[in-house]
Image (cartoon, rainbow, N blue to C red):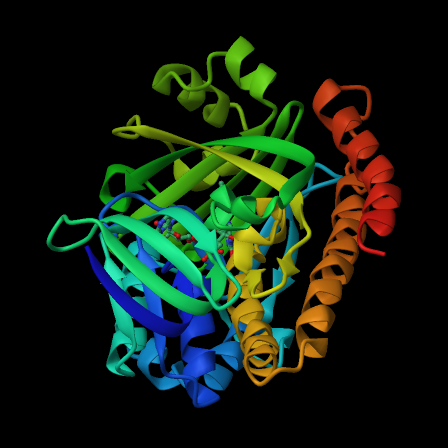
Length: 383
Ligand SMILES: Cc1cc2nc3c(=O)[nH]c(=O)nc-3n(C[C@H](O)[C@H](O)[C@H](O)COP(=O)(O)OP(=O)(O)OC[C@H]3O[C@@H](n4cnc5c(N)ncnc54)[C@H](O)[C@@H]3O)c2cc1C
């Protein structure tokens, strides 16, 4: 068993963990290790990022390198929401320019490479297992890693960037307060297998239906993702994890079906849960959570990656302050995660109430109830 002492250990090498590591490095905090449980080989979800993300890439000093990557430009979105007609949101009117549809795996690998380029220790394939705290530091037990042996890291401050598992924060007694949970069933197509409308190649398409909503996006490598978001009981009842049923439901959409002219079934469907949830508390003495470990957003917002990168930029000064003996920035960070979450809930509630065509259907009723009740609860949770 080996042992190291770091100022900061970050558990999770997704967008939030990598952004935190890079931002700490910018502040001169270099005795940092990132622990990543995977080797970035399994399918990841979350591919649309808005134009404003460019500003975050610049602040992190990775904009030029990102621009050299092969991600697909996204020029705007079409949405069928609240009316049978397609609305159009053109990024032409955004001063930041266009957004992107990412090749998500290569994006996450790219950020990990940027961390390593800065000389920060990056332990991939090593999973966080357990944490002990004494007065001086945390002792973090890991399993796996290159050599497969058990490892132990010591650090003064620990960051939970492990995504929705929030496995580090749970050791401090933090728990998610979950407002709502969607289930998303997604299929990937190869563009050559579909007769797609090429005019839509650079657009996101969103379409509300009776029991949920669909979206599709063209990805790098001539791939297309189509995903259906609904409630777990509806997915189960309609057996939408079966490719034939999922495909039939997609074929019944008014706009997506035309845009994709479905010829073939996707090879495989993938299912993810998508909660709206806030970790309580998102920070404490000598630790904080960032990205999805701190708060999870409904994918309708397309804000998860943006939030993860911004969270890393905000977390770094809070950690730097704490390392120097000032805990006020950490307290400010804790407050701001809750405040931003309330703002997100307001936007989400507004968006769901725009759709009134199926207001008596269980899916839409549930969204309205969930949006209303939780705003009050969230306000009390963060004060
Ligand atoms: C269906 C769906 C669609 C979405 N669509 C979008 C979208 O279009 N746009 C968007 O911006 N966002 C989207 N999101 C959200 C987005 O994917 C997340 O918000 C984003 O990935 C959060 O980044 P993160 O770094 O906080 O967490 P993650 O990306 O989950 O990264 C966590 C990292 O921690 C590692 N890890 C976990 N446990 C351990 C452990 N014990 N030890 C070591 N490492 C560990 C994981 O391997 C992973 O690399 C979507 C989410 C869902 C579910």
